[in-house]
Each structure stands twice: as C-alpha cells, then as structure tokens.
Image (cartoon, rainbow, N blue to C red):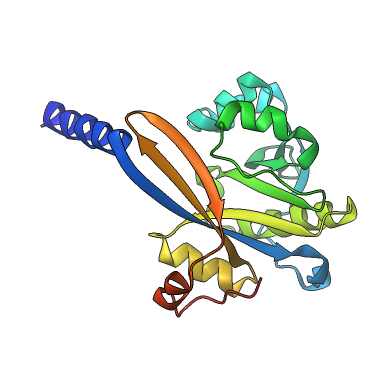
Length: 210
C-alpha cells in the first residue's frame, strides 16, 4: 500500500511538472491602520527574538524552515515563553534581502516594494497550538514591521484554500494580484498578473479592494 501511494505521488508530480498552471492570490494588509492596543493576547506571555541554533530541537520537524536556516536566509524570528522556551517561528522577509530569498525560492517569490514585507513559513510548536500563540505573535510581528516603516504585509494563498482566503479577508487582507506558476516540461516560470474580473466573480465571498 505504501509503495502504491508513493508511486501515485510520483506520477502526479511528473504530470504536474510536465504541464500545469498553479494559481495563488497575493493578498495584502495595511499594518498602519491596525489598532495594536486591542491586539489579541496569547494564553501565555510571549516575546519575540531572533532564532538561535539552540532552538533547533523545538523545530526539527519543520524541514523546509530548517533548510532556510542552513542556507542562512534572513530573518528568522522566534516567539518564546518567559522561560525562554521557543513556541513559534517564522521568517520576516524584507525587500533588502530579496536576492537572498529569491536565490532560495527562485521566481516563486514576489519582489517586494520598499514599503512591503512578508511573514512566511509560520510554524507553531505543537504543544502551544491551542494557546493563541500564532495570532498574538502575528500582531507583534506586524507592529514590529510598522515601527520599521513598513506599510503592507504580503501573503500568498492558494485559490483552493477558501477557508484561509476568507480568514485573511476577515482580518483585512485582500487579494490584489494573481500568481501563476507554469510548469512546461519540467521548467517552471512564475508570473504576476492583475486579477481577472471573471475570477473576482467566482469568489463573491472575498473583497477585492486594492
């Protein structure tokens, strides 16, 4: 059964990389309009700091994130408890590090403007996933970005992930571009285009305000 599952996965991968189009919405939110005095709190006290090598044991199951650590892609931030125990990790991508980030992800990563940043590869340690750590840390990161002079947080969400799209919309993040990754005979090319009107009509649950 395992061999059969692996074989099916290999076949799907070959088909996808031979000829396919993969679609994502780019969404963005204005972090300068957020009322941080009303930011939700986690059920435990947390604070942000940069990742340390000693944190690895808490994130050893996050394979992709650990590859970024090995490649020294900046900037990895960690939320820790009062006892300095890591409970959350993500990357704070800034325009000045675009070349380093793109060298890892290739063209499957949008070029950020001077007032834009991204929060990617978010990972909450399993033991803390029911304590609202992600939500609280997210607001702390947006506040940090605002204080650094950034305005827009950029996200990338699959068109198939309607739940996440609706959640982002409720949080004030709205689709503004369409990312299309084209696979043609094992060659990948990613482009960014304006969202077609017919696609906006297909998603009446979402607000396209930008």
